[in-house]
Image (cartoon, rainbow, N blue to C red; front, side):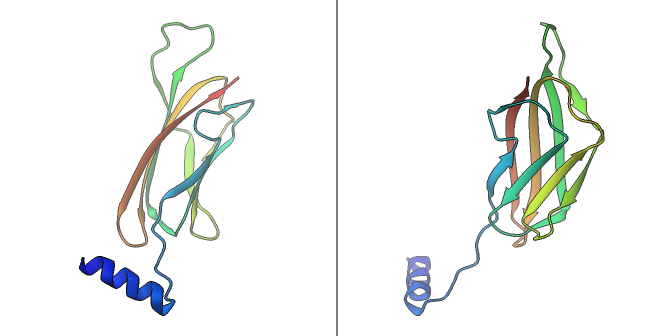
Length: 123
């Protein structure tokens, strides 16, 4: 009840409340099939603390190999976006055709930990 009163007062007074950091979109997008990937981009609604960022890229399937075990892709670095609202997973080499899963974590400017996972395919 108190929180609703504070929010209502802020809206009436015309004050802007700080945006919470949440993932807006990724490139490649979740569920997408693309031709080539040399960088994975994560865009957030508010600034994130890049120093707290972590990510895992896992190749979960490879064309023509029915029993392909999951394989971690380790040859990448994490770079912050210029506006502080993005993270770029910069791969040393483009990914080969296959199915991939990306798990990420980062703290927002408010210290709240954010996590997520999405998958895409390279044909």
